[in-house]
Every structure is written in C-alpha cells, then in structure tokens.
Length: 130
Image 1 (cartoon, rainbow, N blue to C red):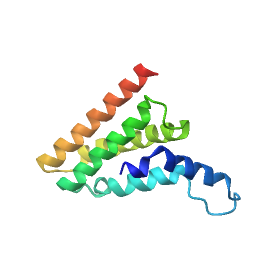
Image 2 (cartoon, one colour):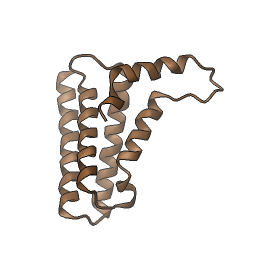
Image 3 (cartoon, rainbow, N blue to C red):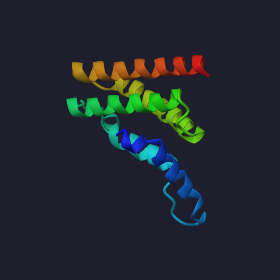
C-alpha cells in the first residue's frame, strides 16, 4: 500500500496527465486515490464485518493518507495532499454512516471507531502544523 502512495508514483501519474489530449482516456491522480479507497473500504458499502487482514490494510491506508495530509517533510505535491484530505473525509463519512446503520462484531466496531478517531486527530494535527 505504501508503494502505491509513493511521491514518485504520484509525480509520474501527474506528469502523464499532461502527455495526453483531453479527449483521450487518462489515468489521473484523482482516479488513483478513488480506486484504492473504493477497493480497500468495500465492506462499508454492504455493512459487512471486516476480517483481521482487511482491518490491518485499512489501518495502513488511513496511516498513509494521514502522512500525506500532514506532509511534514514536503515530499507530497499539493494535489496529493488535497486528494488525501478528500479521501479521509469520504472514509470518515462512510464509516459514520455504516456505524449508524450496521450491526458489526466487536472487532469491526472497534476498528471503525479507531479509524474515525485517527482521522479526526489528523485533521487537528494538520490544522496546527499548517
């Protein structure tokens, strides 16, 4: 998951966006973020319990998006930071909605609650840093 979010990968995708005509099918940085988020958080669409492997993967996803958002060392371009913020916001909204409407086992409930807390903490940290 960290390889998919490497600054060089982001730079290559962004550079490729400029190499094609608008009428051509272009793989964008926005699409990259959306596809990763959609595939990693698919359980939220169906209010399904999340197994331990997927929980670890989702936790890593929140961690990497948080790292991009805070961008302490300036490795990530402004588009990546903005897309990380948008994806964290969308994940947060989906989790809240799922927690309100779904019945989950204790592991999933705890995991989703922890993800919400982590996202809220990152927003606060990002506000303080910037």
